[in-house]
Image (cartoon, rainbow, N blue to C red; front, side, top):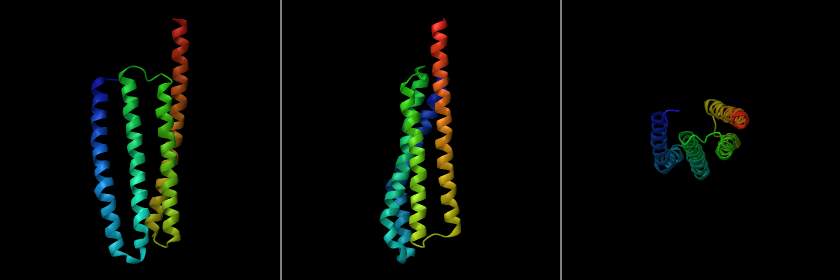
Length: 158
């Protein structure tokens, strides 16, 4: 991969991480507190909502850090190494954990009678996307494993 492309991707990851940190620090608590003011009967969900939102964003940040490390391996021409599997596995588990967290949030909202159909649909879409991404990364992991095997076979032949 071109060094300029990996550098551009890393720059975008830095921007995304900065935006996500701002989201964790200001946006999530602010929105939760505003929602509690507008709906006092649901104020008991403020704390869990803030924690859940911050954890969800932290999971996204973890994926971005793993992608950064994978880009570093690409740039060093070491992507086809056993070290890459750790980052791919972390990404896969993080995607699944995100889906579980979203599902738990939807259940809490349903039990608290605090969800309308559009939020419920959004939650279901989030769960489906999380599972689909985890499965996609699983397939990509299999392709990485196969490419590593082929590279090892090729190096033996040469």
